[in-house]
Length: 166
Image 1 (cartoon, one colour):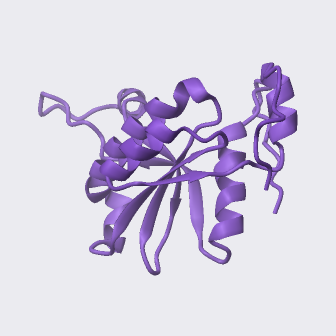
Image 2: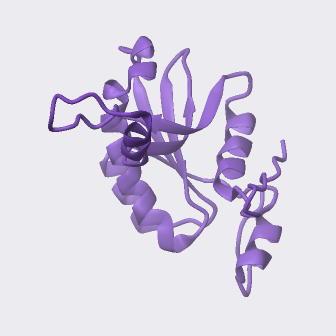
């Protein structure tokens, strides 16, 4: 199922949300999921003073968010997708943090103690990343989205002929 990237009010396209949404629709049909899921809880202020809404909004910025969460049954899956090769390693470390934050995320606690697993998606295979992901217990999947040729042109990849298309 092809998923088109949405455009924000500022004109920015949400490529990664479309990427993980297309992957989930194809490989987890019928499962509910959300994109841009905030993880963890609000950082606690040092003082006992009650915070105003603008102050709480500032704290929310410090919260992390995963590209997507696929809900049980049978398991809870945190999906992190990176389209640019320069971001792949960042995605791996983000996924590691996200899985640690899931048990401390109030709206996800209702799903515990189900198994929690992490999936890292990239459109270009990176063997070293695959080894690292496996060592950390994550699933590493090479998935090329339907919009890959358009995305590759837009960001200026000179040649995409060596890539596998699904």
